[in-house]
Length: 121
Image (cartoon, rainbow, N blue to C red; front, side):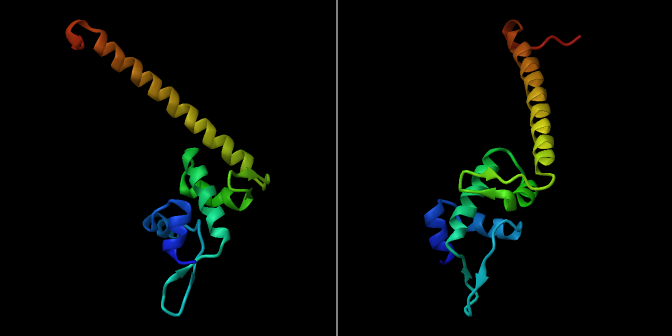
């Protein structure tokens, strides 16, 4: 299928599909006219990529874990080091959440001041 068809079937723009290809997440063949051609499995691959991106993983991490996924709502075949990689990603997300919660508390404290102005000493 051509990139437009893959875009239609997945709801992902052709621009993003080209980006996924550049990142090594999606493979495309080329026809004699230079157009990208995708096989039917590319639809499932794009769905996996979207779910993994929505989980907060970077394309670099997805490139590592994608070969260890099956189904379009990825389940993992626990390839070597994948669990450790995902554990590190989870720890990084937890650290970001903690930092955001701290920042939110600070901002809420500013807004709690009379007139909404922070007190600076």
